[in-house]
Amino acid sequence: MNEQILIEEICALKKQLEEINEKSNIIAKIRMDDWNNNFQLEMMIDDFIKGGENNLSEIFPFLCALQSILFPQINEKDEELEADMKLLAELENEFNMLNVNDQIEEEIALIQRELAMKEVEFDRSKEKNELFEQKKLEITKEITNLMEETNSLTNENEKLTHRHSLIDDENNNLEEELKILKQQYIRNDDLLFELSRQCDFKKFSSAWYNPN
Image 1 (tube, rainbow, N blue to C red):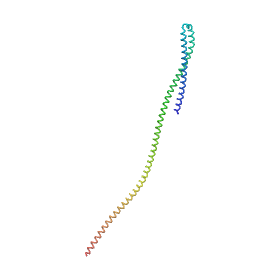
Image 2: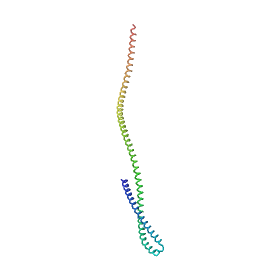
Image 3: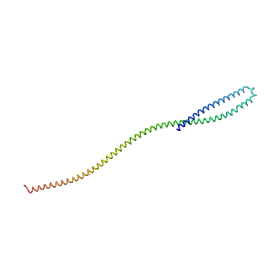
């Protein structure tokens, strides 16, 4: 919005410069007319001088008439010159302002180019950001799937741990039973040995009492 206002002001100042140039042309034409008038006066003086002695008696009235004509014109020209100088100063100020505005316009153009470049960079950054967000969503989805899989494995591990605990308990019970069976086996083996010994003794005793 501010750039548009500056551009409108610069266009208005350019229009003023065109008007000032037209005024300058008018002033130049007036000065040319003044130069022509002065040239005519110089020709009159030259003609008067060329008249020689015949015009000497009229030189003073001629000079007085010339003075009465020139002095008001000189005063008028001084006033016009002063006005022209003021106008010229105003023109110079306005021209300097136009130069400043030209610099501002160049700076605005430079800023616009920089803005265009930044817009391109922003679009590229936006595309990169969109790709990053898309990749981020994909990674987040993968992490979610991995967490779900991890939770599932954790639950399965807990089940296996519980089952392993039950198996350990069962193994412990079986070991206790095995110990008991071993003890029973040892007792049975001892008992069998004792029975075998008793049988052998009875056979020996019977053979001793009945040799036939």
